[in-house]
Image 1 (cartoon, rainbow, N blue to C red):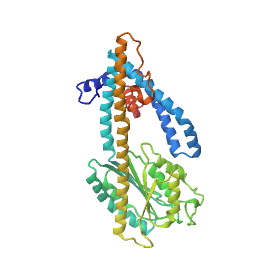
Image 2: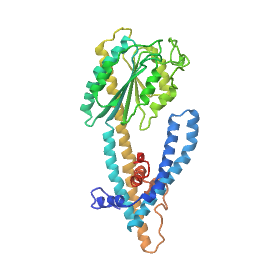
Image 3: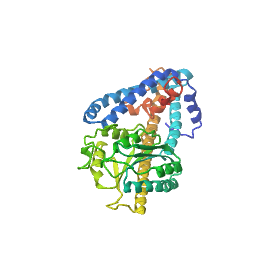
Image 4: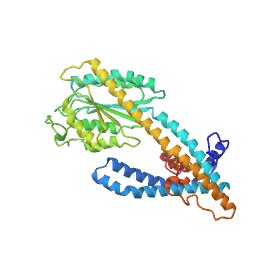
Length: 417
């Protein structure tokens, strides 16, 4: 059977058949499929990021959850083909071609949007602004570097969209414990904010690093690429995170404290994609803290840039500016590359191979339609399928199929559309 191509004259007509068919009656099946898929996704997250107990429980539960999700998707997609067949009088082969055309059209649109989204960036700076000359210099050079760095990124990324935020933190008993510039795309506003922050405060050697990260984690991260840069010259409270630093709260518990692992997992497992974490190292007192943070995050998560300040009371502005510029650019490009790779894999895994299987499945459906006309008992679309991946009703982007039903069902949660 010849492949069904986008330039086929029937393409638009077949795609419209899906849009013109009332599928609201299938909303319960769509809801069930959505719930099963969400459950499986949560188990995969637990297996990847959870503690040992969660990992083991997820490992045991994933196979059954996958079977349930597969079955729910099968029921929904079979029902769509059957509904089109019954409501339009078109053959199941025609209905299947319509589904293929509609999916291909939506896939193309979706991948274009994803490629655009892959050039979007939420960039957050979390900075220790207690009274140290080194941190005051870092704050100034972050302010001096943001605009030129983003302009460089714009030159290589035609559709770059970005938002900036800053979390300036101090210590537990400081009157201004946190100062926050929330996400927006106004570079000038961010520069003004940074210019108005004064490095002051701090009591003991340790600072409220975890509090600053918690404030950052609670911001409204929206864009596909999420980059956080932490600049600190002192470790967080808690003796497990440093080697003998002066710490008024060695237990790690103090007014307004947060569990370190919970905060790091919030950043690591953030809905819509975790953050790319870069640490700007000022001195060796933070080595143990960052090692622990990275371990809690699953290992290989945090990239450290040594700002090479040494023992200088006032760091060289040019060296500092160049180091910060390089860190922002590398972290951003690393995230952009990862996003583009994901989009490319998504296309190859869910489109090309799936479409090849659909073409093969259509041939089988045509034979079934012929047999039915000749009086041979009709076989289901799913009969004789060896696995889920060889069956038409299973193939390609079930999430878009669910979305199609949701868009026709105004009573369902809008977040699904």
